[in-house]
Image (cartoon, rainbow over all chains, first blue to last red; front, side, top):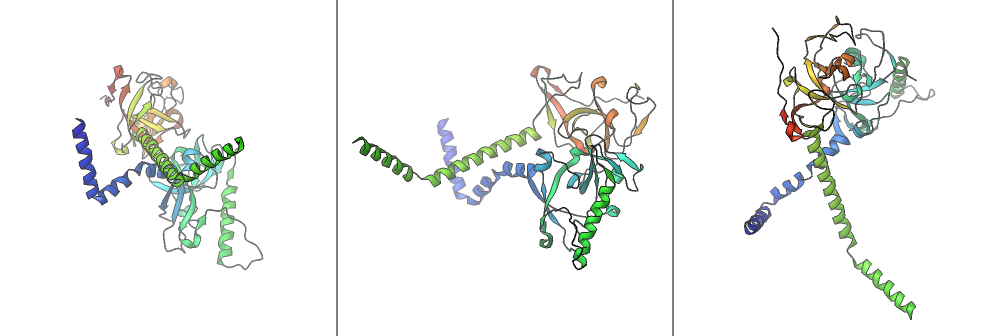
Length: 206
Length: 181
């Protein structure tokens, strides 16, 4: 018994020595659980498709799809849901992953946009109201209603590509009124106005 | 005399410490901890995707505590059937996982509450696309679709396959749904 085991072990070792590539692949496969857990609970890279988050993501001026870093730790472990965060969630109508912005959280009153049947709605317990930045090209809470927080799976934290917009997602800040009013100035101004308009439609619960 | 001896001991110890291959030791302990973390991750993934669920209150199908069931996490939403037992992430609280029975599939018209306690017994609902209607087996003590409405299939975690603990009550959950003509 012991001898067969010893024989098996030595022959296995010889085989592995002879096939170095096989040995290396097996050794790297050994680390797979660590990698999977990291992707599932910490960070993952994804590319964004579609125009629903224009002009924050995939703006017309860019010829590439945006590649962004999603932070799963903040959502799956810390459970931090904040108004204004861009999040990835599973669409309740077809279970596909979509990227939207959290507009309101539970208890808030929201003035809805056209496709929604009611003019104003209170977001129910454990739900959030999500919208795309480009209302016209977005299928969001205005079509499928408030979504359960459990469908939200990660939060967008960093734009990796294109390099022109490389960096963390920042809150829009008002541009200096004395600066020359070039396209960059107007884009900044438009972002601020969009945020103000979004905030004007919600009444935050106390 | 004692001083000299003490100094000698100190010098001796410090030399021994200096001669130890600290770099190698640090590297091997680091690798060992990484391996440990890796094993823990593997165990976690096993428990999450193959493993056990402690039985929530689904009387009389499951008792309140002390039961474990095997769950199939690789279930695709199209294969769900009426009468299946599923675990879902609660739509009211994302940290809670609950177990319910599927009552209605997309397109079904369902009476919200035939007893009329939570809603008038005449109220009917059409289950929308990609949604299911859930109900607990113990209707009196269950918060289910009667309170939060149809639930998106994206919230379904898996289907219960069998009860494995305690061994004396081992059962395979088969679909026992009957149509009444």
